[in-house]
Amino acid sequence: MNASRLTRRRLLAATGTAVSVVTGGCLDVGGRTGETESEVATAPETTAEPPTVSGTERATARNAPPEYDCSAASRPEPASPTGENADALRPVAYPTRPDSFTDSDRGTEYIEAYERAYRHNELVADRGSSLVAHSLSLRDARPYGAPDGAAVVRLTYTYTEVVSHSDGYVAGDSPQIIVTYYADESVVIRTPPLRSSDAPDGLVPDPWNSGRPVECFE
Image (cartoon, rainbow, N blue to C red; front, top):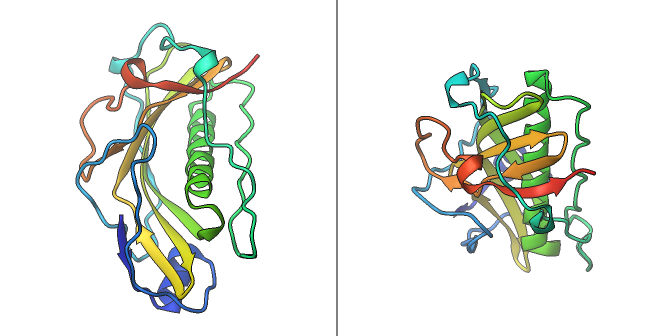
């Protein structure tokens, strides 16, 4: 992740959050669980164009869901940060599953909302009370062919985070993140994110090959 000195105006444009001072520094992104790093791509400073929603690629459809074990389902669910930082971000709720995934637009919207909550909560878990701002810029939401009653969507995005220090604030931009979801009435499956400046061809990452359950429904 690239850390940079930002003016108040640029920080407001990037995050929509007001802070008084931003200082330069280096953010230690560490190795987020299940993620692999590739080439770093800095997020733009200007407002991103609306995400591209590509046509469904039926050629990649499977006839059955990926194999999964609900006992292994896991997702970031941090407690609210404690401490004196009143600006610290709090966890957010995950979206409610739609009644049906037969409408591809509803499935795409649900998966996008799920990843936004997942990323937000992961940052809260990682940064604790030092995280004061976060924004996600969706570049592409691409639906793929899926079994009946399911949705498969690959998301491409970058994000910005702002953390507080004793002498000010540091903002950092992520590389481009690519992650794929499978969702149906029983489970939500997420792949480990790929960090790359170029979107690969085809269904990569593939939830049938590398997906992990993040939520199961009774």
